[in-house]
Amino acid sequence: MEERLITAVANHPELYDTTCFFYRDRNKKDLAWRKICEATGQPEDICRRKWKSLRDMYCKEKRTEKEKRSGSAAGSGRKWKFSAVMRFLDPFLTPRETSCNMVGTVENSEDQGQPEEAAGESRSEGMFAMN
Image (cartoon, rainbow, N blue to C red; front, side, top):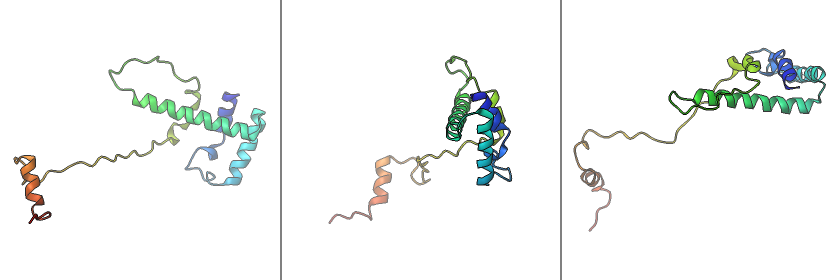
């Protein structure tokens, strides 16, 4: 069933190609899903859920493939059985931007060469005056 579903979805670019004119047309997408259901012989909700699961699994497989580094311990080397069939999605999968909450510190040129406490004292003298 999975391979039939994958090939049926591949024939309807309005479901995965964001550059397709009909990608945002809800009626076209619903019609495409009805045609896919006829081709696979499964109910629409089952087809949609199964497709989402297959697509997510493919994305995960691509991510792990990309993250493997040279010299890392060799894995099992087995690829997911639908990887080859789902390659038609490659041009349409874009990795999301990652962000980091780490802020790089830039040292002032006047602080270089001074011990940390001395640099801290010179900056905080005016802030906390003790009388």
